[in-house]
Image 1: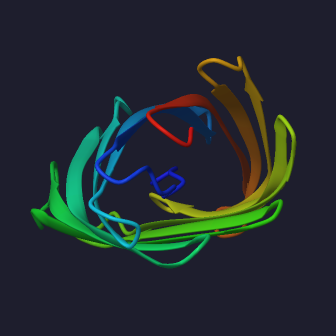
Image 2: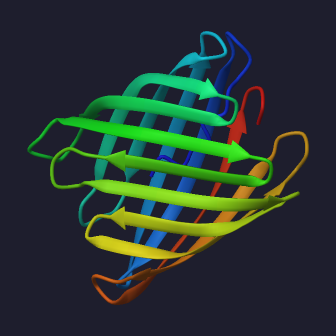
Length: 189
């Protein structure tokens, strides 16, 4: 998913976020790589792009999206991305995104539409220094799942975050796991 914090960089600065994660579901492992970028034109308006590659051997897939983002108030960001995808009958894909942060609480949601791979991911966290604890609600391929999520950040100069989500797919009545690593480059890491 769009695992990004639409953080507001300094005007004219760019943020790059690289994310690699794996979904283990029904005995299969699905590796995913993403790249998110954000460029702020000013304190309210910016431009984002998102690239996603799923290396699942049974059904690989990718997308490239871009679009505007808006910060109507401190700690609130909204974006609307659109672009193209591979291995689908429908070439077009769209994704509205929101991010909210206040004190130690944050929430994020991304909703992707186009072709048969409608996906969404909603997360909420409470931050405690290097740890973030919360929950995740996700639709990924045919999986509709929810569960706890934990993140741990280390290295002060260039923070790196590892994460794990233990998920229960209520539609397929199966457990799933998601784990990965990400880092951001640019201001306000």
